Length: 312
Ligand code: RIB
Ligand code: CA
Image 1 (cartoon, rainbow, N blue to C red):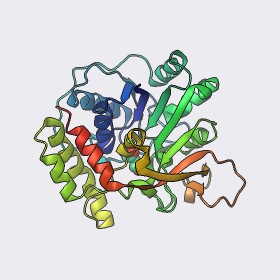
Image 2: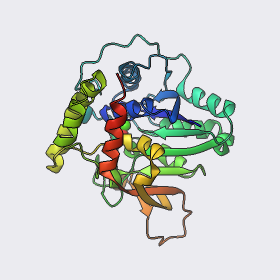
Image 3: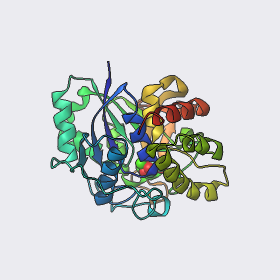
């Protein structure tokens, strides 16, 4: 029985690896890919999503464009990390597959209504604006969502775009708070866990050894993506964030965390976008998220490399 997923994304080199992993995994049925403004503006994130689909040999998949800005704030982008195209590194051809005409939010709503209740997982790899718009427009669909699995936030690790906030949450903190309050089952893969999976030189060599288009593109994507964090953290390799969302679906036993309350700072400018995780249960706020802190990083890369090695 395959697991039905929608990937909401702002590609982004790490988003690209997550999408490749999903397409390479027969356990997953990718119903659609919905682009959101984040790392770069929407016109680029939807284009990049189509480039990645074609790289994976999946020009048959459907890519939808969604929100071009956060619910209430002005868009903040991250070209300093991802390059001006948002997918700097490899030289991927212009896609021939079309962008779907339907708006991403309409697609997600229509899919949740059509598919069996509780069968669709929303995988959020960027700011949560599209997901929040689904919740605003069709709150009655929350019981039909199997799980929202998102990369975002950070508590013990602090932030990456401000001292206290991680980029995806910081860009649209109001959307993130709506997700946290929605009542849907939410699983969070924050910086606390993604900073434990580093694209070390030895691991990049394993991608290089594939000798495939996808392997070579992955090396180019990761070599570009990691340079910013290597310089910032002085590490061998950089954290690989988004593929953890897909790896969690495939092998949840590689991850460790606990149910706890996660609340988003949405007003104080100093800590805007902070994910306040009540890990020790010192408040009586509802335990609204499964917050992940631990991962078997070697097994994660074994999975990622084995699966991407299956692609052309
Ligand atoms: O903070 C890391 C997250 O922000 C990742 O999803 C990366 O792609 C960027 O969107
Ligand atoms: Ca992303």
